[in-house]
Image 1 (cartoon, rainbow, N blue to C red):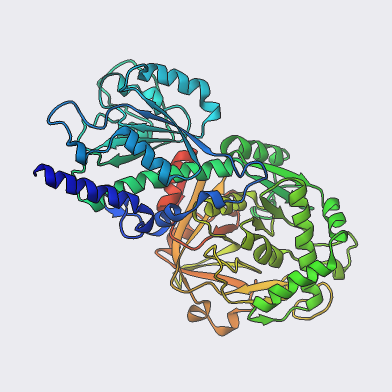
Image 2 (cartoon, helix red, strand yellow):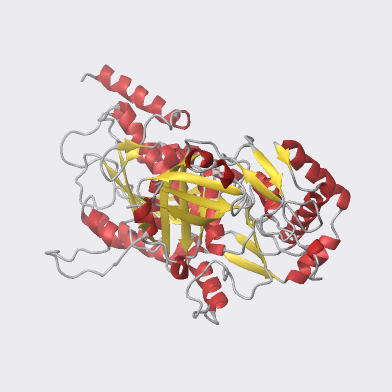
Length: 554
């Protein structure tokens, strides 16, 4: 190829990279099987504007800090030198990453320019890692001192980049498994399992421009995973519940078993240590007080908006207003304690024991909080809420909480609850919903005080959906995927009033295989579900979190 051809190729590649945000749905990144795929969940992550994530006050402006080390000039010493017109230098790559990764601060070290070396960089990284959120190593393992494995095993979420057509001295097996048990070489340090993802770049423009772009987008996608982890680490969850133990209603195991006495302390500590999330536990008395202080006229205006958006309203207007007042009470507490998520199991507006003071908060959480980007659950299950927060940070989409039912005869799974997000795409699109009474109320299907509110939400048919949950004490994420179907296309029309009001029904690959791992005493009976196929996203972010994955349908 002559010099003119190289210039044209350089222009094509540069234009493709600059247009990355516009074409993310057309091509993709390198998967384990070698195919390019940035559709589905990866596409959602690429399109996500991380600056829009709701966080506690004083945390919104914080940037994700990534320690970035360039260990080569982007090409190997052997063979011809790259044509300048077709080559992306370290500085050019850094600038492109800055342009694509809004909210990321790259602390860049280039060992090829003199004045520093991998050993000194490794020492500095170890010294300052408490102030970092991740590590990016470009051209790791090329040769000599660049093969200092300490850089990759700092304990921080790490991305190792291979420049195509450099010598590939990269221990992919060690990065993926933590083992190289058949190594011929002796000595060195034992590293164990790291938090390492890998990427590839075509710095010399030797591939089809679409493939080159796919490589770059894959790197941007993985950097955004580190951003999501940073957002999770900054999260504070408001917890308001009358129950003694966190999540005690979720674990429906052997009646002869009980929750460990130190469960709350053990769980809270593990949540903070492994994910950085903080629980702010508030007694029910504060909720009762906050409810009494709410502005009833403001609550009426909010309830009127919910009623106008609904396709059908069966609940009493007075009960809808009570739910709106409860929503305002939770909002007051959320603001007071500077939280960006709400987990509650409150079922009474006042501690009277009277039916007329019963309520269920789901309508306010789904139509109030989640439409504002604030994740919330109506039963106090932090594992579910952590999954909802991660899903929201990664994709911008809220998730449904529900009891899981597995139906092998119809090869479906059902998530059922008296509510679900009415904005499942995370934008202004509102799906059809009915405001009903709550299925658990002793005076349901009436307009009596205490009949409260529920939601029957219709999510769009044909959409991919992910069912998942983060198991903090197990350091594991369980998940499977399916496709939304209309419940009445599988079951009788009489299914609507059975159990809870909303039923998210999905066709799955193998319901029997999913059911084999269902274990209430280990994993609880509830799951979270956002729209989208997040399979690869979950597998990738689990690596960066240091969590194992449990693909329940594989």
